[in-house]
Amino acid sequence: MKAEAGIFEGIIGNAEALRRLERSLAVGEVSHAYLFYGPPGVGKRTVARRFGAALVSGGDERAEDRARRGLHPDLQEVEPEGVFTTIGQVREIVRQAASRPFEGARRVFILQADTLNVQAANALLKTLEEPEGRAVFLLLAASREGVLPTIVSRAQTVRFNPVPVAEVAKFLREQGDENPELVAALGRGNVGLSLRYARETEMWELRKAVFTAAFSFAKDFGERRRAVEKIVDRAEAVGEARETAFLEDIDEPDRRAKESAKRLGKAARDGAVREALGLISLVYRDVAVVNAGAEKLVANLDRLEEIQDYAERFAGANWAEAALEVGEIQDTLAYNASPEAVLEVALSRVRQKILGAYPD
Image (cartoon, rainbow, N blue to C red; front, side):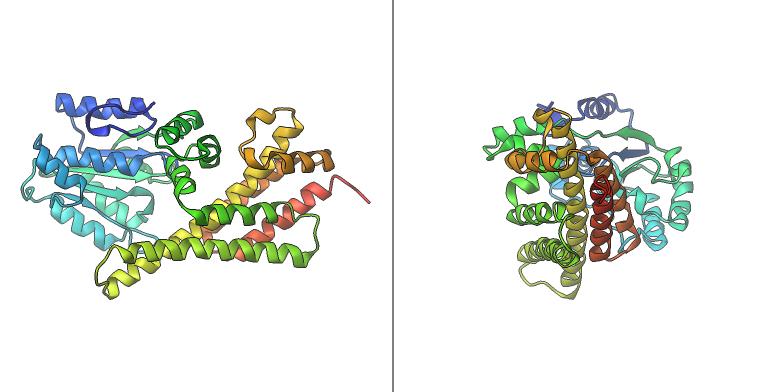
C-alpha cells in the first residue's frame, strides 16, 4: 500500500507505521526519541526526514518544505565518521539538544543508532533519559538487536518491514518502468534496491557477472577466480559511478567533498559486493524453487531457462542449503575481509555443497 495523503504521501508499504506517526503528530503526543528499525531500503530514512520536517515546522508549510530540502537549521542529520558515529559527534549533539530551536517548533536529530559504539551510546543515554529543551531524536537501525538495549528502552520503537514485491511492482508500473515484476523481485522487498535496478545500468552488469560466477562451481579454479574478479570489477564500477554522481552535484568540489565522495564510492562498492552475494543466494534459491515444482516463485524470471537447465542437471544437489550458505557468508563482509576472499570462499563452499551430492 502506498501512502496517499499527508506528510508520507507516495511512500510505499509500512502503512501501519506511517499511520501511527501521523496520529502522534495529529494529537500532539510526540516522544522525545524514536527508533525506526528494519532492513535497508524500506523507507526508514525517508520517513525520518519527512517526520522530522513536520516536527520542526510546527505547521508552517514553507518551513516544512525547507526542512525536506535540508535547508532548515533545526533538522540535522548526523552521518557517521567512517564506520562509527563518534563520542565527539554525540557530545556536540547533546550540547545542541539542550539549546532552544533556532527558529522552529523543535530541534530534530537523525542518527544511525547501530553505528554508535558503547562510548557514544553512553554519552547519549542521559539526554534520552532526561531530555532537555524541545529536542527529538530519530534513531535508525537495521534491527533492534544491533542497538544497545539501554538505547532501545529509552525510545519508542517503530518497525519497518520489507515491502511486498507486488506493491513494489505496482509502483514501478505506475512510474512507467520496464520489467516491473522482474525489478521488484530482484529488490526482494527493498524499494531502494528495486529503484537502483530500474535506473542504474551498473547493477545489471553486476548481475550478469553474478550469473557467470554462480554457475562456475563445476569449472576449474582459474575460471572461478576470473568469475570472482569480474564481480569485483563490476562492484568497482558501481562505486565509481556513485563517486562521480556525488561530485557532479558540486560546482567546485574541495578536499572535503572529494574525501566524502571517496567514502561514498567505497560504501557503494562494498554494498555491490554484498548485493552480489545476495544475488548468488537468490539464484540458488531459484534453482531450489524449480526443483520443488514452484516455477511461478522464481525471482530471476528472465533467466528461467538457464535456471531450469541447472535444476535438471544437478537435481540431486541441495540448492536451498547452498543459498543459505552464501547468505551466511555475507555477514563476513562486516569484518573488513577482502571482497575477493569472501567471494572465493562462497563459491568454494557452494562447490562442495553441490558437487558433493555426486560422488565419483
